[in-house]
Length: 88
Image (tube, rainbow, N blue to C red; front, side):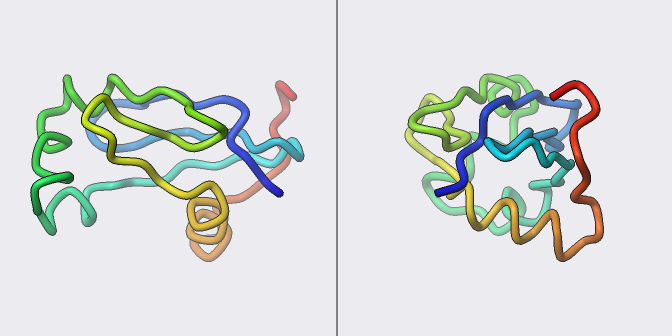
């Protein structure tokens, strides 16, 4: 099972994720945050969004919102942004 091994906030609502298989890429959560809802609303604040951390290989925020690693990888791959992490 693919997990996120490293996560870095790039500013705004963008994250750079490195997966357990050494592949990596960026994802912009702007559209998800823009949809709103009780879990996504706090992420609108860039300072809160930047508090992302990994829990069991999933990007997670202090309010419990998380992103499934497999979904995140598929989204990055679909955007053509998945590549081997040169730092891995």
